[in-house]
View (cartoon, rainbow, N blue to C red):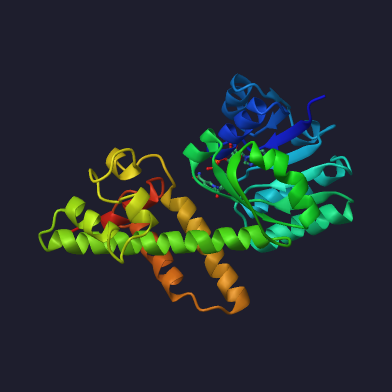
Length: 298
Ligand code: NAD
């Protein structure tokens, strides 16, 4: 008999992830507050539930992909008390990007209820969610992370255990802070070159073979027209939104405060994205994060 998964939060990321679980042979029961998201889930082969408590009934795994830590804690612990409805032998896999503290609260509340849980935030955007090529960064006991593998392998290409509860979130925060730093640096360097008469495609090729080479330059050039199939060549639509990058940089700053770490580059990147979001009359929060180039453009 196929294993049953309750999947909660079928937005941009969750929709593709749940569809891949169906393709892998799991029975998926979906719940989302949005009727449109539920209709799409049905089109993708999920069955749907009218509320989260009904969705988790009899589930072997509960996977969530939700906007923020408050929503995750409210769902599982404070408001919906989902942990009371989940079977003791089920495994909770929260894939949302949330503060490590929220993840630890969830995992320890689950443990008190006799349920195993891990944090498993992802790297890779909507396209990787649809293609089943996400990277998962897991936090939790070795046994719980191992138990999550059959589910995660159906949605991702790389699965890492970063450490104990909350460690997946710490890894995700560090990664995205670095991403913001090299994207802002790449945009700054390319704009400097253009301001001094260089063709951005020529400069990009030079830096790709030189010591400035980095992921933003290789996979995600921020200058429109230099690279095909990336958000900069599509009006900065699709991809990873400025608002989500700001959320992740906010989590990085909170983590740095808590650990008394110095993160001057991360703080600069957060400020640059904040300036960029409101740099003219229009809110740029829904643009792709490579649009930071517009902050430097004259
Ligand atoms: P989204 O806003 O598209 O989807 C979130 C979904 O959760 C929505 O459909 C919403 O209706 C639903 N939801 C909210 N509260 C709910 C509740 N109480 N019960 C049931 N459903 C509820 O967001 P997304 O882009 O899919 O991102 C989800 C998570 O993944 C976030 O934590 C985000 O930071 C992270 N993430 C996103 C990307 C990306 O490129 N979009 C990449 C990596 C990680």
